[in-house]
Image (tube, rainbow, N blue to C red; front, top):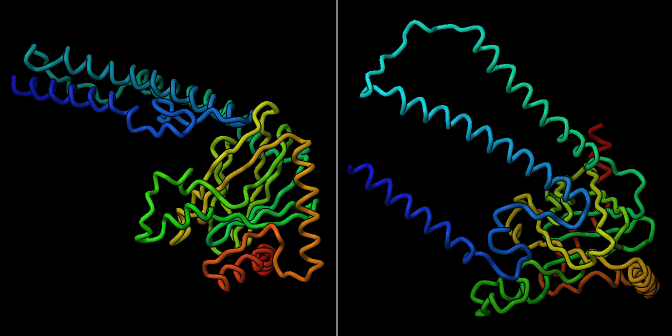
Length: 320
Ligand SMILES: [Cu+2]
């Protein structure tokens, strides 16, 4: 009786907790409420394929769980001692049962491996891209290098978030728009274009992660990792991500923002930015105009990113 009462109380508490879940959700995020319990469907074909694969495997697991736990609970209840059940101690080996419980899981695994391998191959296929951008993670921010367009700039936490995050800043972070998820210079890409990313790290391992694109790739010093995405033609917009590899003190303060724009807008932006950079280098400035004037830790900040270009090649070559 006591156990039944305790179980009922536990069930009531669990139900109450489940009902309050949507209240925890931040309404400023897309897919708020229950949607936040799952991964987003995203805005690229590959992100949707990853999502569909994830849901397929999830439902396979749900069915397996129901069958296994169903048989288990039914057996426990039906063959209990109080009903006069006596344990069978003679059954030590049954070839037919063993073959069945080996073959069925193997078939299930193969059935799951086929669609998973297909999506994986697609994820790794970076050929036929329309734009190549080298992404270098550094402590703490990102450098974007449009290799064929001669545009290079740094992307760091935006001023408002940076001011609010300081110890005893006195700023109410809930008043800062996109707190810790905004940058000074977002990555700008055209929609409906296969964008190839060459991802590396300048100091420690970072990870470039934008869940709406289905991209999460480690940025490792001395290595170039590849990734790609192609934003739907009808879904230009701002997409946010974060560094997904614990990379040190300010790991939580190097967000990623991608501005997906129409092809025409992208061309205009590219032309303007390239012209600005040319002007800046003609004027003898050490850093491109697009790089944010960074008031904090000026010597350290300017010293770190330029070294970003070198280490990718050197250590890899040295270590063979
Ligand atoms: Cu990082």
